[in-house]
Image (cartoon, rainbow, N blue to C red; front, top):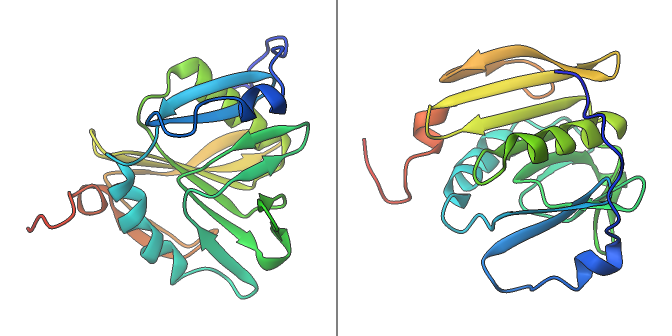
Length: 181
């Protein structure tokens, strides 16, 4: 998929910070556009279950972070469902680049907003970007090559050895908390 080619929006960090903080939505600023999606309370179980799988596989000097603020270059701010970053990327108010991996659960983002975020992550040189679609169920693992994300693993169950060595069964991580077999 090619990066989004559209003019930047007019929204600023001040606009983002003036958005409601308790209305059940997640507000993010990407390329001057405020992106609104449901806060992960109802689908956050996916990142809740995926988090430990990834955290046990992070390389030395790194950690995984769930639903933390990420400041990207160019006054952009997002709250990925899950990310892996070196300890040196942790600041007082969140995470900064560089990162190793961003994983997002598809819920409430339209194609345009998803493309904006993908382009922002590529511009920030995030080497790995995973999309988890709990409804299909499907995981798509992409790596950054020549400024664009290219799929290197995809399926309802993925087994990868980069950027972390894990096996993820989307149906299992998407299972509601407390649900069995």
